[in-house]
Image (cartoon, rainbow, N blue to C red; front, side, top):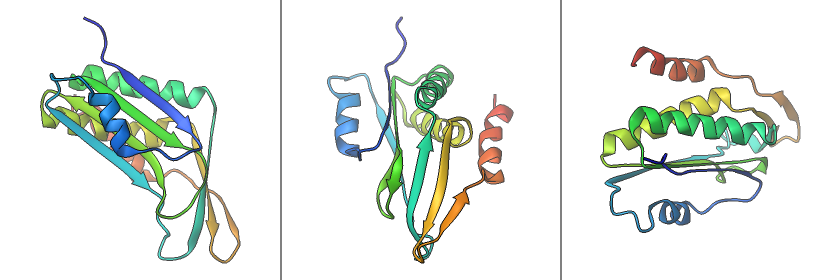
Amino acid sequence: MSRAPVTVRVQRDDFDLAAEVRALSAGRHDIGAVVTFCGLCRDEAGTLSALELEHYPGMAEAEIARICGQAIDRFGLQAATAIHRYGKILPGENIVLVVTASPHRQAAFDGANFIMDFLKTSAPFWKKEHATDGSTGGWVSAKDADDSARDRWSKSE
């Protein structure tokens, strides 16, 4: 049996969530559930004018593909798509999209959560905040909560 299809893109341009779901599920009558997660840039209570995202080209795509492959194997997913933007992203704009498909909903939900938890901690992306007062913060450090979310998967094997 061949491995489920994985689509990974790291791009500057925005994505169309509905078009990505259609592309993943077109002609697939075996899929019983599709779960999407779309992460948006928030304005941090009006103090953030933009979020600047950088990545390690080639390595970011490879790591995201590896994570998606693990999710497919672990949860029996039928397909996975992960798209992550880079560049300057304004509040309200899309940052990341994860789409998973499986025969049943729980596997699709778990797969999407797994991909996001590992993407946030393992894929080589860096974030810098640009404030509404014109100042630029440093590169944003990883959060302990992101590590804890990732680590919960090793406890549930």
